[in-house]
Length: 129
Image 1 (cartoon, rainbow, N blue to C red):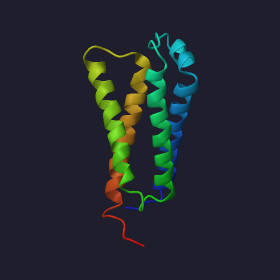
Image 2: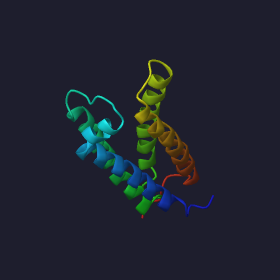
Image 3: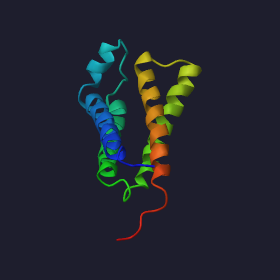
């Protein structure tokens, strides 16, 4: 399978998680207000995951720069997307979740599928230099 799509795809993943992380780190109150959602009793509950998204954004950028060398990092991205999707969809189908979170769950599901495809397309472990 051709791999030319990997660099732009992982740059998009870096941008997506980076923008979300920055938005929730610096403007979470405004984002919650825009959707009419009561924010948590302390912004650290939102800012810590936001900082994690920024860290993952950096990781996705590293993957984009050298997908073969950084193939193993893709599995951490899969873990991130599984974690968010499993929680979001669980609550969406059981007790409910504010609608603000639902598009992110579907976007992450698409990212997860493409992370798996890209990981498999890179085949075996990278060879030492």
